[in-house]
Image (cartoon, rainbow, N blue to C red; front, side, top):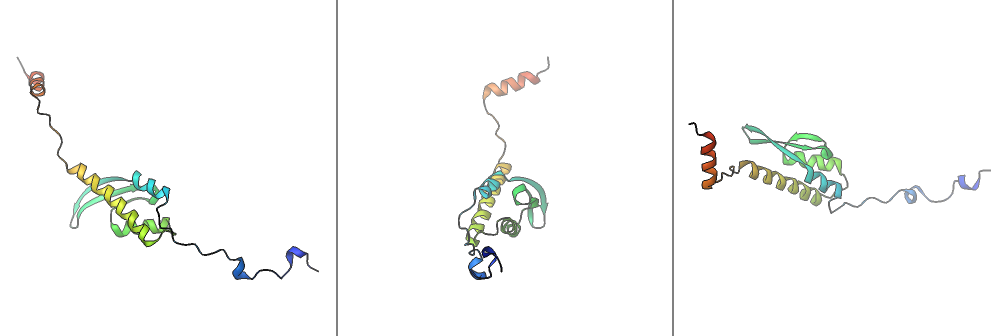
Length: 127
């Protein structure tokens, strides 16, 4: 005779199975922090345009930016995210990339103060 806790009766296999997970529609905090912490480096141009290296350990290290690659990495790391949430996360990373490119291409600020010109001239003057 089997002990009661080992009895063959009870719930069926389908009742013991955990419920299927529902897709997550909002971004997890760790993904938001990963996107905020991503770093970019311009690697030069090729036939397709600028090549930008993305450094983000939470999404698998470094890679050359490509929208499809971003979606693949997010889907691999966060499989429960819905397609809409993955698209939002990819757009957030793309917005950070655009801000980086805007800062890189902005010309350096040159002061136009007369005092500054005088000080620079005085420092380089040879008597």
